[in-house]
Structures are given as structure tokens and as C-alpha cells.
Amino acid sequence: MPTLATILCIDDDETALNIRKMVLEMAGYSVLAAIDVESAIQLFTSSAVEVVISDHLLQGKTGTELAAEMKRLKPMIPIVIMSGMVERPAGIEHADLFICKGEAPPIWLKKISDLLQQSRSQAPQSKARGNGPD
Image (cartoon, rainbow, N blue to C red; front, side, top):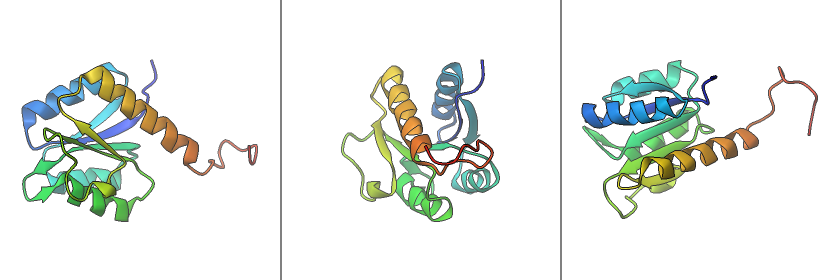
């Protein structure tokens, strides 16, 4: 089965990161995992990532601060903030989607799939695909 997309998953809680990575891989995604902001930025800038999923409360930076930084680097890459908070955190406008950690995996997997489809439909057509405008 081909992978659906490459996702960069960020969480400073290694157990939560590994569980989320496993759920995403079982759903068919290729997952790059980062346990800190520095490795997340390095992976984000050096890899062909199609979606970023970040925990909101990270050591040294919030997920929304990280999202703002990533959007400056690659504005077309969708960024998802996951949080245990029910209310949307300050700075959420830098992210494309907010998911409460209390949501069941099938629900947030569907939201990520929909976001990926939307992102791909808005992306400029690749010259490799040819055929000109739709």
C-alpha cells in the first residue's frame, strides 16, 4: 500500500509521540517524529513534509509559536495543533487546524485527511504532471 503522505509529528512527550506516530502509520502515513523544536525545524526544512502535527505545549515554545515560524519558512504546508486544552490557544491563526487530544483517532485522522486533500487541491499543479490548467 503506498503511503498517503509524509507527516512531521512533534511532541516533547515521547510516549504520546510514539502512540500518535503508530496511529498515523497504521492509517498509511509516513511519519517523521521530533521530540523538540530544534529537531522539528531541521526535519521541516530538510524533508518533503506534507503536513505538520504539533503538540501545543512544547518545551521552550508553544505549538502556535512553532507554527508561525514554520509558516514563514514554508507557507503552503498545513499545520495542525493538537492540545489537551478544549479552548483554542492564543496564536491559533498560524495553524490550519486545531484538534483536541480528547478526540478519538478516527475523528482526527479524518480531519487530517480532509486537510491534506484541501491542501493538495490548492497547491500549484506540478510541471511533472503536465497537461496544463484543469
